[in-house]
Image 1 (tube, protein in one colour):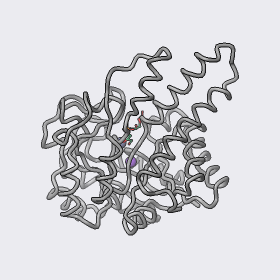
Image 2 (cartoon, rainbow, N blue to C red):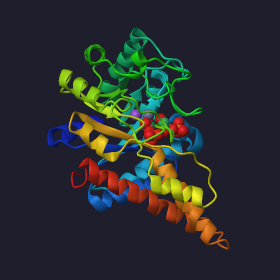
Image 3 (cartoon, rainbow, N blue to C red):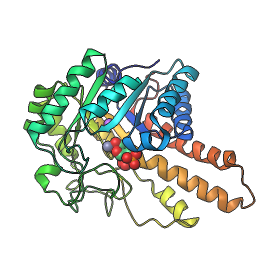
Image 4 (cartoon, rainbow, N blue to C red):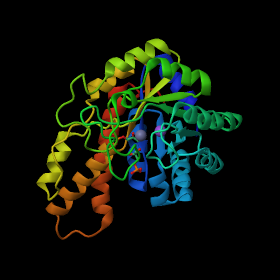
Length: 328
Ligand code: G3H
Ligand code: 13P
Ligand code: NA
Ligand code: ZN
């Protein structure tokens, strides 16, 4: 059944687990997520970015998610819009049938320029007002995602601030977070603690000065009843980087957010964990390896099957590590 995000996150808070929220752009990702959830009996959050809508088209995304609900009726599914850049974008998603939206007012509507507090409150509160009137949940964001190693936001062409930011922007302030929740009434709050979108998060295995799990604890202590969201939370599996590079790829040395650090966050109020890059890496690695080992194969179903299986295994591992397995 299609459910609101609030329902799932309240349950996760009550029972002390976290939910991975996987980005979805195509059939193979959707199947991978649902097959994993079905296998371990986990509730599902699937999210579509602006890039996903551009790639697949909003009607295809919507019907793919509805198809998932139809094929797996026993699994609760949240259809979430990731990183909405304006109230208009969120409103259109609600009209399309999304049961949850993110209004990312940490950035202006260009999705690049850091916004001030008053702008963020204004756009987020606007979305909360109309979303709650239709039973749709809202995620807000306070602080800007970006690397505490370099001050850079992350991917060049993806979602995120442009240029170099200072530490006061890259780390969510607990007092400001508390005020923001009070001023907006959001159901879930994305926070900045040193993670960034994409594969290039850390130049070495992150230490506690660049991945600030301690800041999650401070925020949770200040607003214990708010569901916290970690963005940029792919773990960037070294084994998939190796496979990609072994079979013709060219990715640089890079590290993600270790699963055990996310699990520590879940002990301190993190309920939603956004993951996109890990599925991209697994998919690409599986396809590169398959095509290199089967040069005469040209049926896309063959290589897309190994892609789906590789993504499914990442999903299963995250459902199990975050404690959402068995909770559907
Ligand atoms: O927010 C970032 C997600 O990884 C979505 O990425 O904008 O390339 O679809 P995208
Ligand atoms: P990753 O790039 O770490 O997978 O993060 C995805 C994300 O935060 C989507 O909103
Ligand atoms: Na989101
Ligand atoms: Zn994100």
